[in-house]
Structure formats: C-alpha cells, structure tokens
Image (cartoon, rainbow, N blue to C red):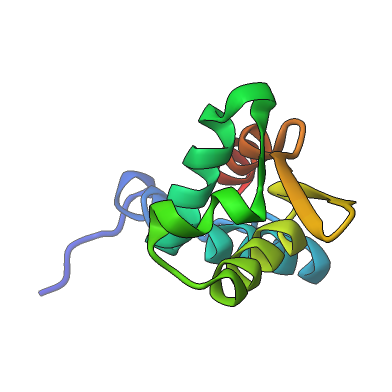
Length: 113
C-alpha cells in the first residue's frame, strides 16, 4: 500500500536552480581562500596590518615567521596574486601593505557563494 504524495511532502525536495558563479569569479575566490588557507600567510598578514604605517619590508617579515627571505617572498607573491596585499619596490627591498578592502572582499565572497 502506498500513501498519497502531497505538496508538503515534495516541497522540501524541490530542486534549487540558482545560477552558478562564472568560472573566472570562482577561480578568483578560490585563489583568495587558498592564499588565506596557510597559517604562515595569515601570520604575515597579521604582521603587516599591525606594523607602523600599515606596511612592512620583506626584511622585517622573515625573522618573526622563522623562514628564509626566499620562502617569505614566495608567500608574499601568493598573497599579492590573490589581491590581499600590495607590493612596492624601494631600492632592493619590497614593501607590502594590505590591499584596500581585501579582507572585506573575502567576507563578501563568502556571502556571495
């Protein structure tokens, strides 16, 4: 014996057909969260945001995280590529600052997904 199916029984199972993010936007958001998914990069962002003037030289970022300048530079490149920091070359040193609105953009990406 089968029971009759009512609208209330099927309403919770109705397919949701919201449009998917465009591929380019999904890739941008993935880069952002991949960059934020590493503890060292989070520490680097913290160091930069708490530095005097809101910027830090690459030379000031190596000792606090206990990594070589080359490794820190690699992490900073990933953060820059994700749009989280800006980079300014001054002589032989690179200076980094948080990109305007970058962390707000991360929050917006979560709300939009």
